[in-house]
Image (cartoon, rainbow, N blue to C red; front, side, top):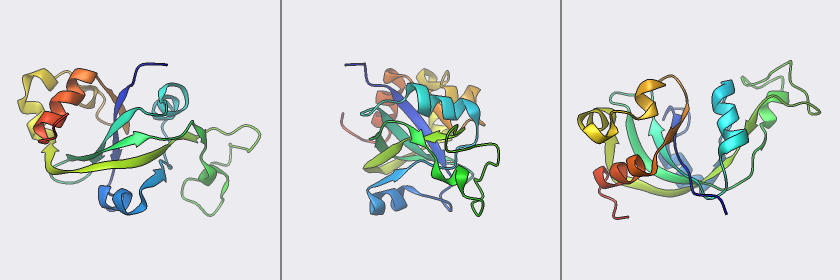
Length: 156
């Protein structure tokens, strides 16, 4: 069995929030239209991997909870729907361009972790989040993951 991996996945809370995921229990992480983020879901994410749910495009940006990858990658159905904002005319069902995974709710943090809190911790300054800020999915090391859980007041 492969080693568990850790991720940070961004969503704008007015599009889909941690409260939406808590209500829905699980969701397909659709709408990713960046090849590097797609490749992470398609090639690297495995069932059982953990991910932080990061509310982006808010002041302050904040890690609000935790989720788990609960499916193998599969084609994002919205790429085939001409009425969807995620439609891709160059994609076909025989050769889909966009993949996704399903994630399930683990917990919402009582104490969200702001981006500033991350920057204030010297052990987190090398996070991919700070190097690849525009990417909607970034890798998190196991040490970073544990530190962020500590900052959120979660006993691991």
